[in-house]
Length: 213
Image (cartoon, rainbow, N blue to C red; front, top):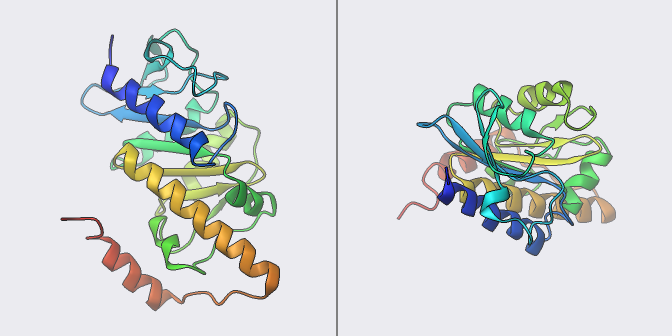
């Protein structure tokens, strides 16, 4: 079985999407790229995360041709491949329907740095305009919005997070959902004070070594 370890990781973190409250049912999707092989393991379309087997995880090449796995690749394969093509440092993509990030996306709001943990994405979390899921138009919009950022809100849809590894991409998705919740709650009772560019520059600088032992 090709990409067995990567397929197992896709299943593990797919289940974490549900257990951590970042999606429901079979919503959202996850992929992991092995650049040396030029192969991507991606969650199968429409399968409950707790029922996915390694053999069902789709494996595709960078042109989108399926080379292994009995499941059909996620309907959002297009923007996963587009991000890998545009961002050579990215090897994992996590797409969620997390409640607070999706709430902001349905308001068509960006997420400003009301909390410093927005720095997991960059100086803010930008908004990609709405397009029908699974379309080339959405893929292009996601790539454009995420240039310079590790997360973006998808208008009336959800969140996309990227990083060099799957655990780190998942951490981006988790932290941005937290920041989105804090921002939403703060907006419900007042007007949040947004960190300025100088303050966020200092945060992003410190994040360069965050987690290094």
